[in-house]
Amino acid sequence: MANQSISNDFLRKHSMFGGFTDSELNIIQPLLETLEFAQNSKVLIQGEPNSRVYLIVSGVVKVTKHHLHNQNEEREITRLQAGDSFGEMELIDIQNCAATITCLSDVKTVSMSNYSLYKLSKIDLHIYAMLIMNLARDISRRLRATDSMLALVSK
Image (cartoon, rainbow, N blue to C red):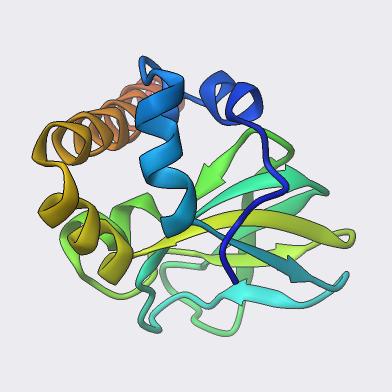
């Protein structure tokens, strides 16, 4: 379903859409879908395919990963809330999900599929490139934070 209920001002507050003008966001808006998930549902499952990036509009999710030595045990990595996103890695590297995303409440998201991202590249290459750069920056920030946490743990 095309997204008409999320304002450009809300989108612009998220780093994925940072730096875009209203006219550029108006080009992106028809490519977004509003998706809602019930509490306790799994949006993504580690090891399964994913072809979307999700921006949380409302609600809270937890991010879990299988324990390295025990695939039956999951460890909570973090919690995400309104304004946070997930699924970027799979959209960029086209691999299976790196983590499981479980809704801790009812969750409303705005989502863009891999196909919609491809369509954007055909509609406006400049907007597509900006969006990819914004996604890459988000992934890079997360990697830096993870590196910092690992450096503290390994001491």
